[in-house]
Image (cartoon, rainbow, N blue to C red; front, top):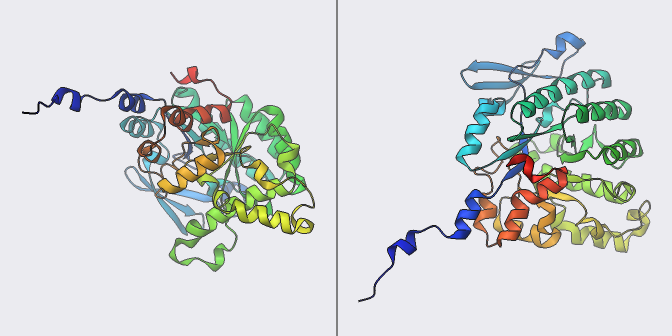
Length: 357
């Protein structure tokens, strides 16, 4: 009779143990303060987001004219609740950034500077309280470059390691000349940049079926990447550490078309930068939020694991439910998984692993 070694079969393998205990850093999470000032009363005009705490552990995000935007739970503002949920998933560290609807680029620049300071101080306070669990990214008034740089410098002073910016600034592409100085400042200060889609192009024409989020966001992110490439910003700022949300949106899967357009119509595409856009695929960073094994494998093959980092979009519904589950279910070797789960994040953020052990 065949004897079965049951102890061997049910004993966790070394690989399984390493996956479970491997340091995990989530570079794409959003947070906001529990209480937001009534900016309309302070500034004298509306359009800002407010919170209505209508029942325990829940709040409605509202425009200050009362228009409903989103229902959120306390994991959107409570660091302690976030730590509990991270612990349940063996997630060690979250990179905190504000909710993009709070960018307030549409507001007067000096008022946006005030709202940015308020949000940044809140994130810095959490990072200071739990330095091994959270890393902070700030937000800045991108509609005014000088004010944006001033707040960027202050972000560094209060312990934030980078900034999150929108994929466009009031429908101006990131490659426009007025933003070059800001990216040069990020490079000079060694501040990481995370680009998140917002104010999606064509949003007003596709309100049904959640299309702005499903179709607009991927296109919006590719718009940002292509603008930074074709304008020459990424060529000017070769040491800029810049990462794009949602796996770079539609950019990775359409790089063939983008490259082909560059080659056949240089009179349109190569007017400001003569370098093939494919050359930049492995010079920028991407989060891992692509939602499918096939796309995850494609992105890692295209850009390299050293350019892809775990990101979940926590705590929102389009995010990954269990941080790192897609990475762990694929047949990546341990070296690749280590890069995806924490090493690439640390490189992008210019931080040492020992800070979080």
